[in-house]
Image 1 (spheres, one colour):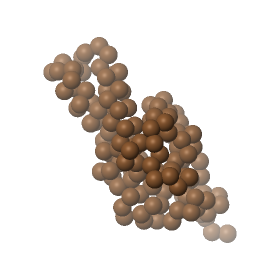
Image 2: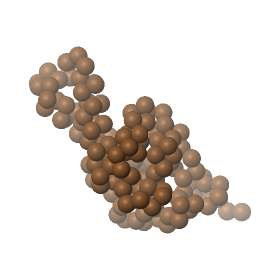
Image 3: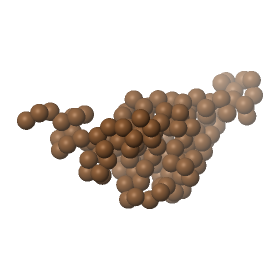
Length: 145
């Protein structure tokens, strides 16, 4: 019996959702997802620094400002457009597993809050979905080849 891609026991990641094995709408890899998160964090730091001024990095509570900015620049565009700036830059988006056009505000807020906790994105299922995706009934897919 040949090995399944990405260590999946029953087929490839996303097969049970009817997603293709590769290309547009296939499950996005962990590397792209992590890089998109890093881009969003850098944007949040830059925006937070603009609000806090030149001594932002030594300002008490600056980490909370960055977290708040990151939460806003992630949850809002994911709710409305399906992707944050980092996701768009890397050609991935959040898709609903129930065929909704967008995931909406409640699911985007839940998903983003669970990412902020750090552990949920690291515990992944055979489809590459973390607890945050499972809780919000989403999957991150490639939006371009």
